[in-house]
Length: 201
Image (cartoon, rainbow, N blue to C red; front, side, top):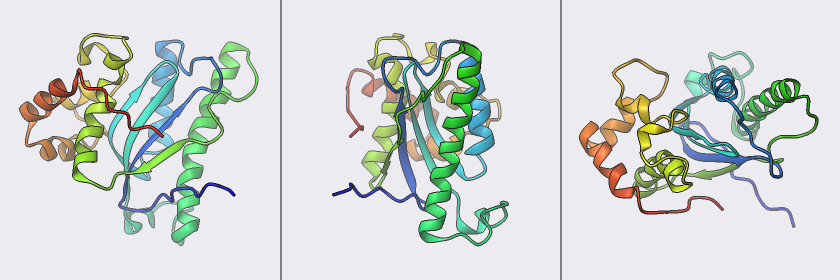
């Protein structure tokens, strides 16, 4: 019996993650990371706010809130969609992101075939505790995997954007206000630094 898929719905927040198919890495160079973020802005920013992200060599984590039906109605191809059709369209945007990145990656490294696992994972964020812990989990991922010792040392996550005064497409005002400000945001992350909580599965 097929496993039911979690529907992606407007104004709902989700943890989305995926990883490489097999033992390869998704990202081999800074150019790869930057290109993926460019494609992310192209495909995902129009349909969702991003609260947190982290790109790791062989996997990635995203925390997004899909935009309202009213906002989406102004986008080409979304004007009349609702329900299951809209959920499929959201999923298609992510597929376009992953497939577009794979094509460029394959061309750069003279490889063939799929790069990501067939279906990206998703989970609805349905509690305040989950929301709070997930942001810290995503930002602490490079520390937990042993790539860096300090959060700020990993350049391919939204952590540094949260602490920067520069404008960004990240919905950091929402994230910071959720914690009560920058100091509280940082304190919570540091408390969670040595706590490994798994949000996958």
